[in-house]
Image 1 (spheres, rainbow, N blue to C red):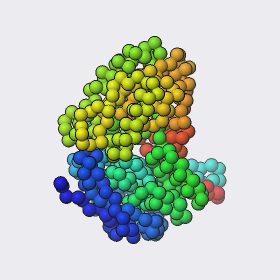
Image 2: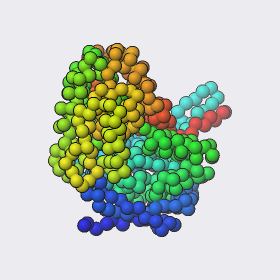
Image 3: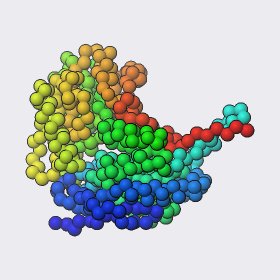
Image 4: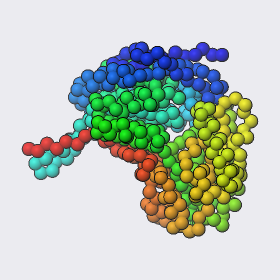
Length: 474
């Protein structure tokens, strides 16, 4: 057994310090099911100390020019980019994504966003509008509490923390306790870069304790949360007591509309990929594939053959496309949904419960055909490699089914006519829509409608979430 890494310090005021609590949280490698590290089980008084440090640091940090803040972020960006391979190895072990995918996705995307926010800090016009005798200025909101998830553990930290820092805010971060090691690696880099004391503070722990303490704290001006819709609702309730700003990036059950004039093979093939990325542990995953009812058997057959090529394997093995799910809890959850789909009468075209591994939290590619929109697997977020294929009668019916969800995060449309695809995309009530397999854009605003969240992340829109608007009348 390898040595267990001790990361039981928390980061407050520019120093690694002891938690006030004696509890420890084990970090488990999802491939081996072995404990690889321990982190502190933080308590509310740790949050008090972290918020006090952030509050003390805020006046000086917010008073810096955008260019001065950019210089710090650029140094962090440079250091992080010099350690890509080490960071990739850490995140792959942390949460199970194959190395070949983790490098561009789990590390490449967030590093691109660090650089983008460094650039924005130096170029954004905080005094951006004159309206007669009024000067409209944008100012940092203050101390930001950031609560982040395990599925993209570095990317979600970066979208919150570096946007807030670029805006001139200071931050108290609660990283995921499930896959925290990549966040600690980033904080080591931040510390080495010499970010001023108290500008970034990190308290590990569980959501009901540390997360709630952050959301409730009267000296936290804004809380930004990414995670489940259930937990996001709780954050909003707790934060409402102090009337602080709340940004939420929550769940999804996104529909992929393959219209009757689309190339079915191309559309289904791409759609399987957009469902299975990160072993399906993606809030934007296109998990509902909508196809013309008369072509449902054909689409199911294509999806099944494509899905078989999504090799389940160890993260370190070349050719692995689906690593383990992040935890035993998540594995049990996904398996229960597969059982539920069978129980409710969906056609199990490919059974991911059979994957050949006795150790590790694996679930193989799973395809359900003949799914109806009232089935559990068509309504609830599964967060695993499970695709549900649903037939529709016509274009209006497809749009109706797509919008028949409490969520509204992402979606897809396929058509041989780009204008038709765009017209349908405009009818879908979601925060983003891929047309004919469009690529993800890290500079574009990201967020959802309905119970998928409040606010936007990434790019200029993400920066502006952390700014207050002030009118100066002269």
